[in-house]
Amino acid sequence: MLNAERFKKEILENSNAVFDFSMSKDKHTIKKCLGVCDDCFFHEVGDHCSNIKVKWLLSEYKEPIKLTRFEHDVLKHLLEKTQYRFIVREKSDNIYIYKRKPKKGLGAWDISTGMQNLNIFVNLFPFIKWEDSEPTSIQDVLDKCEVVESDL
View 1: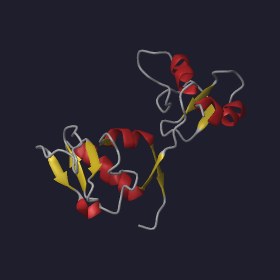
View 2 (view 1 turned 90 degrees about the horizontal axis):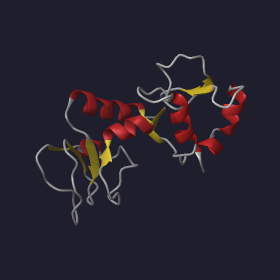
View 3 (view 1 turned 60 degrees about the vertical axis):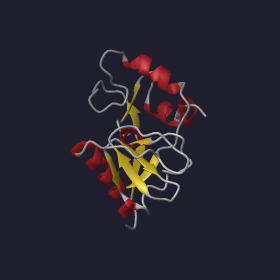
View 4 (view 1 turned 120 degrees about the horizontal axis):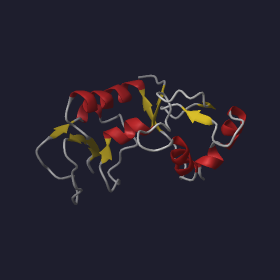
């Protein structure tokens, strides 16, 4: 399903012209474009928002990753306060973070410098799996996530 199909109703309800809509940076709210670009997902320096909207409308819709507030805050801290950029789950279910992009081996991700064990959080981040062929970029998760309330 394309973004155009997924968001058709919201776009039609909130705009009176084809490209007269904006989307919040968290990608949860579509509203009429009022020309205030700072909080708009489609605002990008160097390209007109109409071009970005067309590409987005014709792109495949991807469900946002659901994170608890705690998971979100842990990842945000790692990204903003440390140099860790990737997170993986080992075959043994252990979680590791890496400063540089690791490569997957037969039973583990490569053991390189800039790696840290996060096994205290082994029950968190269920979307990160050993079966993943690539390490998970913390920035990508934060860009695509939706924070949900939880019982943690």
